[in-house]
Image (cartoon, rainbow over all chains, first blue to last red; front, side):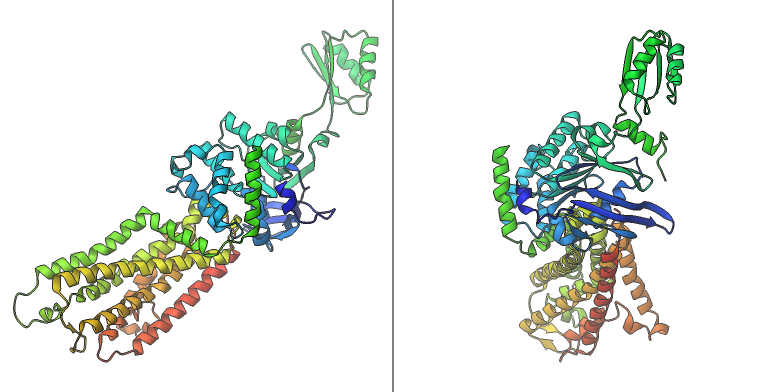
Amino acid sequence: MSAGTLAPARESDSRAVRAVGLGKRYGGDHLAVDGLDLEVPHGAVYGFLGPNGSGKTTTIRMLLGLIEPSFGHCELLGEPIPGAAERVLPRVGALVEGPAFHPYMSGRDNLRRLDDADPTTAPETAATRIDLALDRVGLLAAARKRFRAYSLGMKQRLAIAAALLRPRDLLILDEPTNGLDPQGTREVRSIIADLARDGVTIMLSTHLLSEVEQICSHVGIMHRGKLKIQRPLDTLTDDAARRVAVTTPGPEAAAAVLSELGMDDVTRAEGRAGALLGDTDADKVVVALVNAGVPVHGFAVDQPGLEDVFVSLTGEGFDVSG
Amino acid sequence: MSAAEATMDTVAHDAMEGGRPRRQLLRSELRLMARRRRNLVGLATLCLIPVLIAIVLAVVRPTQGESFFSVLLGNGLFVVLATLAIEMTMMLPLAVSILSGDSIAGEANIGTLRYLLTTPVGRTRLLVVKFASLVIGAIVGVLAVSLVAAVLGLALFGAGDFVTVSGVPIGFGDAAVRIGLVAVYVALCLVPVCAIGLFASTMTEQPIGAAIATAMFGIISQILGNISALDWLHPFLLTNYWPAWTDLLRVPMAFDSLGKGLISMACYTAIFGTAAWARFTTRDITS
């Protein structure tokens, strides 16, 4: 609604967020971000995923004009960043690397300060907008408390309120549910869903894959400074490898049949056998098993989930990429 | 939800219609400064000095005779001068150093800088507003100290004839004007300190570091100013013309050193202001 009236004429190739060959080099040779081609369509809820240290936050800081790209360029809502930052950023709400406010000021005064700093909002409506934003994140009752007395979840809520101080066309949220209790997490998800319904584009960086599966329409996965994959969520797993799983008292015999069918990566375990489906027709597998006299208690074709895709792209290792 | 949304929409409309006067950020900045307890305690400490000076002078006041002091003490405005002379050696520059060292680095340190800049506040605009608020802070400091000194001095020592540096007594009105000018000059001396502190503040995320660097700059300048072998260097030192306010108390007033002092202040302010701008507008904000 509001977003629709505020948005500029949208060219067909316009994107809410676009990065072309975007990169950031630190200290001569360390590439924090390495030639990123990022495209977030208008109206998308874009899940920006990646392990710790994969360059997500550096990317977000470049998108918001906080740090200068070493190469490549980026734009928000069709305007170049950092060139047009002052013109376009009022339409962009951002949460970067957690909440940060003045500890000795109340939540309301902190929002007031940010609103004072925004040259495009009207001071007369500030009090109303601040209370609406506080209400939306459930902080109205704690509005007069000093920020330092807030819990982690309340701090996070205040940061989200700051992003909602005025209607936005784009929200860039870096781990918005970090530190929230389950209720808070649900509320934030529903706020995001509401905003998305209103046509606000949302770019969401997170570790929580379930969150992405619940609310995102698009996904981009970063690893070691590179964007490994970027596509609509529903097509993400399309060409990922599907597996068959056979539940049977005779796993050896079943595995032999699967091998005969030319399937790769055949596994056998107690009461189970499995293999990569590949180009084989799933219907033929059951027929072959039955014809070979293998008792089949159960048969399934497993579509890999987001987590499988994520791990296959970013590795199993627990260590952060340096 | 729908009611709230409707309100949000009308509010949004208003937000787009009316631009916001740019003073708003400066006002917010001053509020931030005035509300910090540390700053209020600092201001109170600065104001304690004239109280101490006035009390000490009142206690040791010579009861009779022709001593130099007894002549000076005919007018309580002398306390203002004594206070400013003492506080400019250390306390006022230090207070301004702390205030200005905190200006950008303090926001970077707690992370609010990234949110201010994405609000967005243009970097140049933020720097200008910060500088303006620092100068206002310095003026308030000098003014508060001078007022306390004047009120207390006049209460304890009366408003008799004021003896100038030239030895010529002048009337109360004339003396008050001159001492007002002294306060203005002293406040102007602190403007380059604001610029230096602002520059230091753009170099680090540690406000204490920036404050110490700024204070050291003044202290080293004073030390070098005391080494007579370096007298060729003295005209270029930050603090060289600070004591020139005594020329305002001559009959007639002498403006030579004062003029040079103003030029020196303008140069320092321009150089460090530009350096702060060059640094801050190109810096990566990673805090």
